[in-house]
Structure formats: structure tokens, C-alpha cells
Image (cartoon, rainbow, N blue to C red; front, side, top):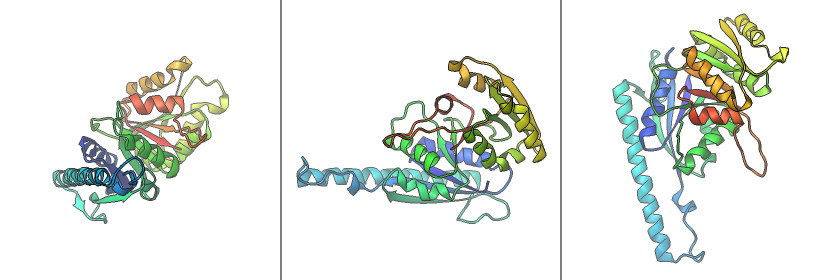
Length: 284
């Protein structure tokens, strides 16, 4: 994992996401694309004649530009201070195994503006929010997860002591779970401990020991774990197991349902991404 995308917001989330990127890169050099995605102000202001006069439109446009300028300055400051504190090389090249990073403001139609950047990153990193008061946050994360073909990491508001050293794989034998394992093999191979956790599945084909055996063939020491829980408590049981083994990452396949353009997370995935203090790496 050598290239990480950190969408910026110009607030406290920036420091947490950037900090998580460095924790994820504990095994060596990595490049971090810090990108502030902003709406083109002209695209969000009503046209004159659509219930608004020219004077009002001009005031709205000026206010929108002022807000964007403040977010640019805040995000740039967050980036510069973080780079200085972490001794990050500013630029687009990794030198001598040290982390590098660069900052860019991307103006365009959100959330789709994130797609080209998310598709060239190994992992996209977002900070989980208990209460989403920024409409762009949810749109950007869903677009990065479902439309980039890449992994998306959600972290809590506090940077954890470590990430991806002790990994839990949420395994149910699904195509999504299999894809998650395949796409995260580099992380699994670098981890100190891996646990394959299956909950409420008596299907022998989904026996966690079988996936653990496959991982062993790839040089990964993995421990199979089976447990039971009621349907409503699957996410709680998974988190409890992760806490018990001191996991610092849960890998899970993300489920989506696309109908009339609406995308939603599967139940367990949704519960984990909204409540877990352990970083969640989701793959669709």
C-alpha cells in the first residue's frame, strides 16, 4: 500500500485522517494525496429568474466564495502544520522510504469529483462521524467506496495507536468478503496477527479454518474464530471479538443495493461504519 487518498474538509477531521494515514503506513514509505474537494460555487447558486433576483444571486455567490476561501485556507494550514510536525516530505515522490504528501484543491461536481483520485489510490481514508452535519461527507464516502473499485478506510475521531497490525476479517463466504480478502492481501501479509471471524454460519463451505488455511498458503498466519449471535447482534459480536483479540482493523465486504440511484450499506457494514472505534476497512 503505497498511495493513500485523504479527502480534506478544512476542519478537525483533516488531522485525524492524515494521522491515520501515517499509522497505516507503519511498514514503510507511502505517498498521501491530500485533496480538498469543493463545489464549484456557480453550480450551487440558483439562476436569476428562478425565484431569485440578480442582486440576491450576487450576494449568495459572494458568500459561497468567501466560505470556500476559508475552507481552502483552513485545509492548507492543517496540511502544512501536520507535515511539519510529522516531518513529511512535501512533494509527489517517496524518497529514501520516508512518507511524502502533497495538497491540492479540487473544484468540481461533488461527489463524482472524488472518483478519478480514489481510483488511483490504494486506500481512501475518511473519519467516521457520529452525526453527519456535512452533506458532502456521506456522498463522498459512498462514491469512493462504491464507484472507485478501491478500499475505503473509516477511522474514529481519535487517531488509534496502531492500524493494520492486528486484523480481523469478517468472513461469511460471500463474494464481497472474498473480494475484501483479495484486495487487502498486502496488508494481511504485513500484519502481526490475523483472525478470520465467522458468526452464525453452519455452512461448512464458510468454515473460517478453510480461509485461514488459504492465508497460511500465502505466508499469513491466521487464526479461525467461530461464534454465535442473534441476527440483531451480529455487528456487536464481531466488534466484541475484535476487542478481545486487540484488533486495530476490521476488514469487511461492503454490500450495496442500487435502486433508482439510491445506495445503502448492508446492515452489519452500516452498523460497524457508524459505531466502531476500531478502524474499518471496507471493500465493495
